[in-house]
Length: 349
Ligand SMILES: [Zn+2]
Image 1: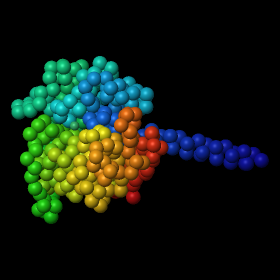
Image 2: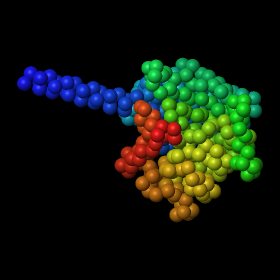
Image 3: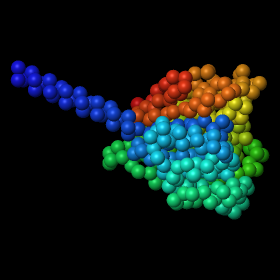
Image 4: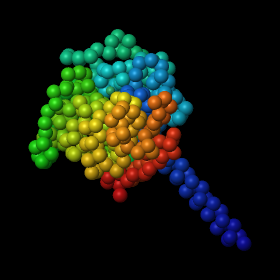
């Protein structure tokens, strides 16, 4: 009898330990939210240690700032923005930052500063917004984020390029000859989009690429003559899916498994970009923040299940991605649709 009780106790202890592990596993993963800013950008990372990294802050005014605050405080349970990155100076990326700075403490702001050749000036209100520390980011810089205990997967957020300068490939890297042979230019680099900050986020096996609104000819520099990005799991469709960006050489070189497009009801999701995404064999899932409601939408939309906002009257639904603590898989959720699909990371099988 005594033995049976001790056996039962041992089983109970093991079961509790297992529960603890499951809880810890969920708590230690990386989470990404594509907050709906109706054709703007606001991509929020909640790091495994609970830090918040916001890449772009949506449009001016309260609508997008309020949605960002709600996601950070009510959904993610955080109280501040540890790092805000403004990829470039267009209103749909920096605009919300001015209101946001009044609503939540911003610890670190990362952007291009006031550089020579600044094409689109965000203005005084942006440059004077309240943030504890302000940093001008350079190609090759990493945003210093807290790490889990030694032996756990490492998180890195690295700048691959900005202000039209890009990191170089390590010596001996093979040239991307076949893909680069098909390169062609587009003369549409005339705004601050071309100066976008390009970020590569890695957590263990998982890799996520966010290039802001980087334009076509600049995108080519990321993969020709050398692919400095590598292969990625998740591709944030550049520039909301507009065809001034989304050079197919990038898709062919980085071979993403999942693409997430922060388009609006009539912005982005351009026919050329949509066709290129559909032709990308590596893609297992394509998501849209909005249904494309333009006349070409009949042929340029993914299935409704993969779209967060399907009506003209926007509900502000987000797309959520959770990377497992062991980084072997990640799950994309659209809570509004009850959509949930798990993908294996490239090297985590
Ligand atoms: Zn934009």
